[in-house]
Length: 280
Image 1 (spheres, rainbow, N blue to C red):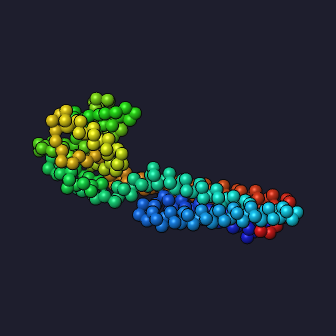
Image 2: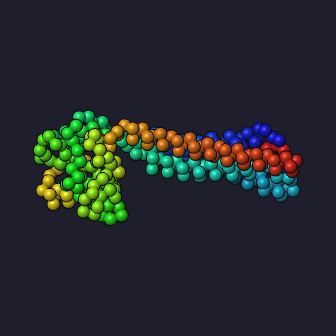
C-alpha cells in the first residue's frame, strides 16, 4: 500500500472541506467577505486543477495501454466533492445560524431602559435591551396582519409612567390570532421577563413596521421610530446558544466528512492492494 498517497487522499480533501466550511461560517464571512471569497475561489481553482490533471493522466495511460494509477481519480473526485459540500454547508450555516449572531453582537447593549421615556431614535443601534422592572408587553394592545405567516406585534409598555410615544415593540411570527388576540410571542407569560433581542432581519422589520403603523393608526398611538424585539428572559444566553450551534454544526460536519473520507480511502487502498497496484 502507498501510505503517502492514501494519507494525502484523506488529508487534502479534508483540509479543503474544513477551510471552506470555516471561512464561510464565521467572522471572515461577515467582516472580511472579500478575503473569504478569495480563499474559496483559490480552493475552487485548486480542485479544478486536480480534476483536470487526474483526467489527463487517466487518458494518457489509457492510450498507452498502461494500468491506471489507483489514487489520482479518487483524490481529485474527493477534493471536488469536498469543495461543493463545504461551500454549501458553510453558506447554510452562516445564513441560518451564525449571521444572526454577528448581526446582534455588532449592535449595542442597553440596560435599565424605560420604554415610556426612552426614544427609538436614540436606541436605533440597540441589539440587546434590558428594560426596567416595571416593563411588560401590552398584550391587550397587540395587533396582527397577514397569513402564513401572521406578523404579530405588541407595544412594550411601562406600568409606572404614561406613554407619549410607543417606540418599543415585542414581535413574532404566528404567535397570535389574526386579530392580535392571544399574543404569546416570546416569554410574555413570564412576569419576570424584561428584556428583548432586536429583530435584525430587514424583511421582517419592514413587515413588523407596517403592522405597528396600522396598530397605532387604529388605537391612536404615536411613535418616533418603532423598534422590534423578541421578548426574552436572557438575551445573553440566547446569543451564546446561537454561537454554540454554529460551532457545533461546523465540528459535526467536519467530523462527518473526515470519517466518510477515511472510509473511502480504506476502500481505495483495499482495491489497490487486491489489484496489486501501487504508487501515486
